[in-house]
Amino acid sequence: MKRYINHIIALTLSLSLLTSCDQGFTEVNTNKVDPTSLAPSMVLNKAIINTNYLDGFGTLGMLCYNFGIVQQIITPYGSSLSGGNYDQVNNGNTQLVWQNFYRNVVKQLVSVLEQTKSDPLQINTYQAARIWRAYVYMILTDTYGDIPYFEAGQGYTTEIITPKYDPQQDIYKDILKELEEASAALTTAQSPVVTDILYGGDVAKWKKLGYTFMLRAAMRLTKVDPAMAESYVKKAVAGGVFQSNADNSILRHTSLYNNYIANHLQAREKTNFYLAAPFVDYLKANNDPRLPIFAVRYVGAKGGQEQTSARASSDPATQVGMPMGYNDVTISSTFQANGVVSLWDYSQVNLNTVLKLDSPEFHITYAQTQLLLAEAATRGWVTGSAADYYARGIRANLEQMASYGSTIPEATIAAYLTAHPFDAAKALDLINTQYWVATFLDGNESWANFRRSGFPALKKNPYPGSEVKGDFIRRMIYPDSEIIVNSGKLNEAITRQGPNTLDTRVWWDKK
Image (cartoon, rainbow, N blue to C red; front, side, top):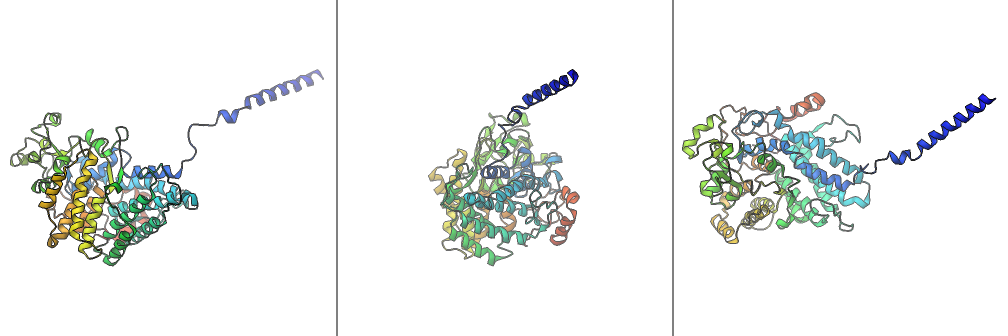
């Protein structure tokens, strides 16, 4: 009996100890610091930020391909930096837009849309996410052509892990529809989402953004579906597009949250990229006041270590663009003719103005909008003078230089406009060449509009080892990863669109 009582006492003590140890267990082991969910508006902000890449390496697609194809920025180096400079496939860089957008931006936008689509209190966040998704898919489809669209980003929601590739024609139709519906549905009846990174919840500006993106998307179709292009251009203008530089869609940076192109060129790639001769020559020939803001030359530098502030000059007269078609060895044959002593002596992008670490990046601007309207007016699609739109577009971009801390005086702007009047006989050339300048450092848009319009009238890159059969690179190839994870749907797209090469044109890029 004594033994039995001892067992009871022991069991009671054990249970007592277990109970006391368990007290506060849940509270102690609950992380009160890390969030378990994020507000959709904050996830949308993250998607907007990630659209401009996650780090400096993400910008190599633009640095090695887009800028080189449109002959604004070039590198003579190969290996990991080859691309538009040699007109060759570099698998490491052709896939960067795809990887960043599908793995990050698209997934984040799908999450926002799923969380807000049935919540009437978050209608503006929902519509803003639709607008931004349309912009993101424009970049994706402009870069690759037929892509996963209607089924993309649904691995978590509907378990579609091998989405079908949709024809670009269908994608653009839906992009235009989404922009029209979302822009119209934004409402001022709700309190602004003040955490919005672009406009601080200003619904009127988001509406303008949506209609301005619609104008851009519509103008992509000028060659393949002019009737649809005209229809949506008119809808965009009626809805209300950007009216001044105050409406510009800008990603702002600080010394902590850097402009990643600037970050890359201020560090690892500082001595590797140079302004291309066609771009510098155009700006010099036209006495363009943007040249000293865009360019710097370390005069007489014989190596990277000699690219010092003491040698730095932004004087337009001293700028020398690097010629196209050379590598880091053959480029030496150009030195004497161009009056430079080494490849390091050619002009580069100015790291003290447009590419400071805290310099802003622009998604779409008033200047670009006015130039597109100038073309639309030339085609008879909108009222107003093409010459007036043209002049306003140039002026707006010149005034936009103040965003880099480089204000161009009014007298200089007026003189430039007087010296470069609109000529209706050369309308498409003049408008789209100015668009080329106005989209400097936005490689996605520069390249897309160059393919669409055919201007500026650049010459084929003469690099002897080119893998491109035509004059220019028309699209990026699909990532090798797609061959492994989604080969069936990929092959359907290739059969429909054409070979998976740099030469294959996307749907709207009609000859």
